[in-house]
Image 1 (tube, rainbow, N blue to C red):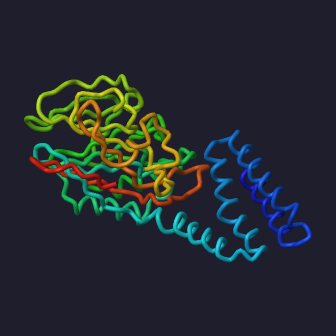
Image 2 (image 1 turned 90 degrees about the vertical axis):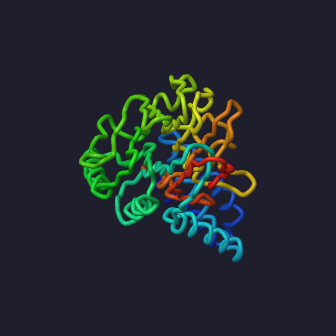
Image 3 (image 1 turned 60 degrees about the horizontal axis):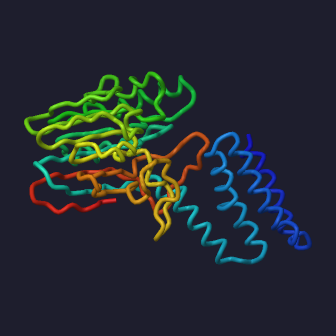
Length: 330
């Protein structure tokens, strides 16, 4: 509702801007209304404030610029808007990252975070199948809708798309922070093992996997055992990496790469305690081991603006092998 009211007010100011005699008044009022709309939406939801600001930047500001015949600036904003709202959100990148260790191919699928399961999600899962991983890890945030009935419907559609997806060492899913109390419907009838609480498994001799509960993934005090051989840890949030856990490869999602990145600056917002330099791709940790944070498949939903800029969605394939040089794919 706040977004609708803010858009109506901004549209009225767009009209005033086209009446030249009102232009000196319209532009500062436009800026004030945009800021006020963002502040009011922020009282309701921080993502609501971002939505108001996105509408103002990519729709109303170009209209004001056109009233002043600033064609190039208006066109530039329009091009960015088409890329951010139409092109990038479905331009999934299949990234490959190589790290040193025993031979192992991991598919890291994070933040599907959909409210309308369809062709895009099925395409991503087909890419997982084509990659033929030894191990498939789902790192949380699968369906994001507020209505319980619609959640069940979308969860069923996603489970159907997953079908018999599996890997030789198994497929495992940890909980994200958009999941409701009962999120079992997402993986019902599939080969994916759903994990709520932290546990450590021995997948084969010399290879251990720790799956973190969502609260442990937020904590630098997560209890992660010290194991022999190669140890992989996966959690929804990357914050647990701050606790210097005794593992070789740490995996996470949650930050979406920021969804909006600027050249030279990186992600504008990560919603994570880790340094911004850790929030995307592969990082050699000071304590040893490596952290990989995927940009994820989907986007923030509900009140948030549906956009990605300079931050394509990512299906992460991690190839572990002896004597290879680490290289970030994101």
